[in-house]
Image (tube, rainbow, N blue to C red; front, side):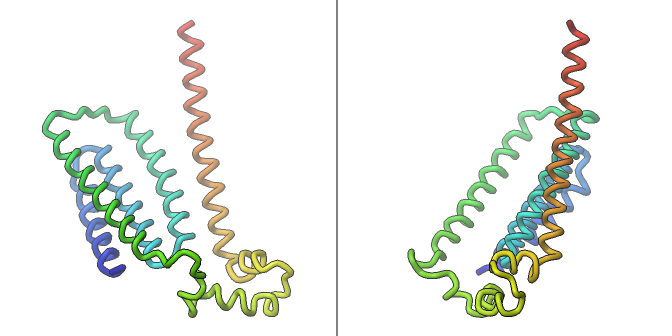
Length: 187
């Protein structure tokens, strides 16, 4: 089941990439690129890499904010009646697909009270818990996992998160300064 969903997402990403390359409207192109990033994040989540999925989503949101902000300054677009029906149809179809994905995920949840570790015997977490103290010498298993087993991964994630926060603050600060400057010049 997961293979078919991932395959469908890859097909969706390919179609979105073609749309992003071929469209003449910059905003539509950016939205298509955003759809690729969200689908990539969902694929990471499906293959069992939630930390990479979260990082992908943070990077995607930050890059979309920057690109949309740059596009709105450059290109003012209006939507006519013909495009509203197509956009509504695509939106409803995507909401339906996400609903089906969520419903399928809900159906595959284990019975309440079943330990998650019993389902994934070969998972790295089993090794971390069973021999983490002995291999690392740490007094806290969470610290051992974050700093010893997954140190570089954690460093990369923290770097991406701080970069995203600083980028968003920089964008908001420039907008706030311009808003204050426009307000002062009108008075």
